Amino acid sequence: MIIKLTEIYETGKGHSAPAYSYREVFVNPEHIVCLREDEKYKRLLMENHLGELNKSQAFTRIYMNRGQSGIDVVVVGEPSYVQEKLGLGTEQLLKG
Image (cartoon, rainbow, N blue to C red; front, side):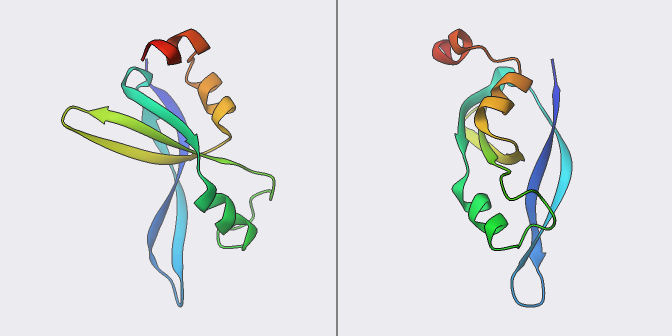
């Protein structure tokens, strides 16, 4: 099962600071290794670098297995929300 989330990513340099944007990302929950709140993006939000999001918004970094290497994406939402959206119960996270 593939789940659609909203990813936040750096698009490059703006006038004086990096620019950020949002896009859809599709994630296979079977390849997730770890979910962790991302403090960097929370700080950027508080400093008004991420647009008009609600200041109470949280971000989750998803670490995924890619064989010998891994990939991670940062999505909008707190870890418990992302866990629920991905359909990962506590017992599933403990097994993986």
